[in-house]
Image (cartoon, rainbow, N blue to C red; front, side, top):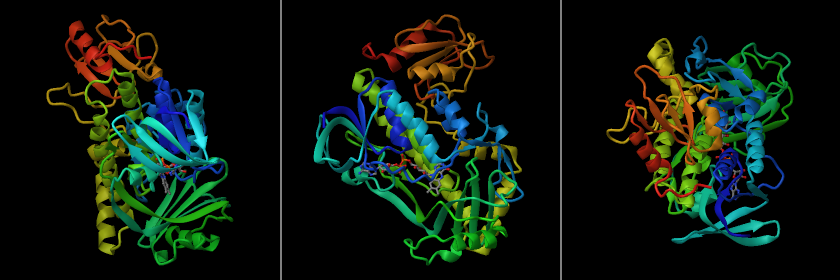
Length: 483
Ligand SMILES: Cc1cc2nc3c(=O)[nH]c(=O)nc-3n(C[C@H](O)[C@H](O)[C@H](O)COP(=O)(O)OP(=O)(O)OC[C@H]3O[C@@H](n4cnc5c(N)ncnc54)[C@H](O)[C@@H]3O)c2cc1C
């Protein structure tokens, strides 16, 4: 295979999102995927507000929204409700869409941007030196090698790249099997997103909008069943009857599986020229629907940084900030999903009762509601800020309307930095896309937004010299031409 700047291993949602980011920035990349024809085992269904915002920043949100069913309130416990209208986003909802649908949108976009996806190619070996990485691959025509300046392992929970790079995957496996199946129901539940749990476990139905439902069951009475034993319709019906009091007229599944989920995080997301992202870097309990969302957000964080480094305009140390920013987010998401898992699948009667009481109490408190909604939706997540930096630095940029009718997230679609300014003194340049906004009392007057929608720099004082210095620091340290 020919050499290429970046090889991405794995064409799941993380790898496809990363390929599109690199192409948007003008970087040559190739995705190697071991599956030839068969689709990725479709698992995720919840796309949260922050991911929808980032898809909007690439012009893809409408297409994903079109394929899904919006849910505007979730019930973490029967009798409770978390109203998602409190999420301060253009998308105050969680979208139910099969992972295959999200992947199709991402793949089409990546290929349209010029990404090369090579299927039937499995990575089996990896060595790196100061200048690049060599991958040994097994393809349709036998063994081959490819050399890249950087390699990103987006090859899922059992990542070969992670193993070949010698990175520990620290954590444990949960004890309770998860049964998944796609079924039709003769008596669908009234709620869009139906869930019930007891001491025996948790059951959920997620509608796909085409008459099919994803049935999910954590059945603690089935923990001793061998993992390779096929899931039967009777087993699923029994779990729903015992835990939800009804099997809703469930019919023969078109697809089913039984597996154990894990809670693990890679000790480091970078070894030299090799990076890890998505499930290769962190795996969660599916409760809370966070894995794919976190992976797509990893990709958005890493894409522009790799491009800046390869094109020679990256501020010093930029690539290290991938680990600094995304590893703590991965750890936070792991704590959150583990906490949710323990709340609903507690082993002891007392433990379950006290945890449920705690959620009910918390969900009645507006600050706690906002915090939980912010974490689940991803809108409340932010990166660290250097000492003395403006308080907005590291936060997500809200989607403000420009005076010319263009939103900030529309301006981000060029994949460049966006300068949001209310002083009326800023002009566009090769390095930044300007968005003029009306003055906002008490807020910053100029904000420099990174290509991934997070704030790099902001000021409350009108000062064209400071703006120019920030643009030079972030987008043009060597004044190199970016494309
Ligand atoms: C029951 C369940 C429900 C879930 N629900 C949600 C949800 O609602 N929301 C959410 O955000 N997440 C959810 N998740 C998690 C989500 O499915 C994963 O986080 C997501 O698939 C990770 O994407 P990825 O691209 O990182 O990895 P993957 O989707 O695992 O893709 C990895 C790809 O790499 C390829 N590959 C592997 N090894 C090699 C190799 N050596 N060479 C070449 N290619 C290779 C694989 O074939 C695969 O295509 C759920 C998970 C489960 C189990």
